[in-house]
Image: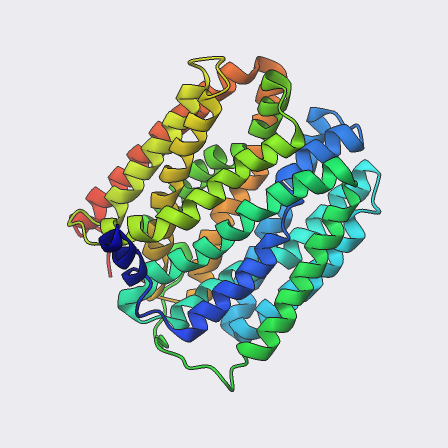
Length: 403
């Protein structure tokens, strides 16, 4: 037991103080993002929108994410990651507070679009900041620490959110989300001021290559869209599946989603450290993770036993522990070829596009064909994703892409 504990502690060694501060800011911000997992339930049960309407609102969510990521990447390369992160946190906090007062279909579409522009400007800027605050050999574990902060906040957020909905109302979620974003922005202003922090890996590329001309990166981009399409069902379609077929309460749904974040908090860093030392590389690890996630959809069609939901959540959780840190690390490494903001914006945009396509399409598929067909469709997408990553691995191994 002591050996396991020491191994766990050692997996955190060597990370910079700035990475720890960025993780704390992310934790505070993420702990308040309890609105997002309950957004589809809020729209259907509180505001009485149809599943079709919710699908289009989630498309506006994704469009805002694409625009925000693109603007964030461009401005990061022009004026720096620090200013973008501060602006994003404070402005998105204010937008979240305003969101609770919007009641009409178009009002909510525009509101969620603006929220996501502000919120997702943060992502490419944070990735570039993370790269600057990390030594090259620590980047994957630094990414993992940020993810631990995200998931620790996420494990508490939905559980608390479910209790707030049960005992108070949905309105309280918007207030908490907005206030925590503003608090995170204030903390960032105080502890990560460029005059106070130490840059450990400043990339100076005098002949930067465009991410948009990097064909292997486009293959990676498409694979991440498809993976995101599949993964994001856990935050729109699957909560409705839990509610309608298994009759779980909002509190129970929150606890099940919270289990995902708790398991990631406990297991992800040691798991990443273990796979980091394997000889097969990041892309093979991503294939393993993607296979686990697609299996999480297969099992949902195997039984009506409520315990199968826990099995599915476990498979998805361990799959994402392998896909996200190593895909992020691959993107950070590739970004050294050109404008870092542009590369990391493209990585963020992949998941933004997945938001546009995934939420709406998943809900429309359920509305038209039912849950069983939809889960098999997601399984097929997972298989295609694994094949694309395998192709990318083979292409890079053969050195076909021109440096």
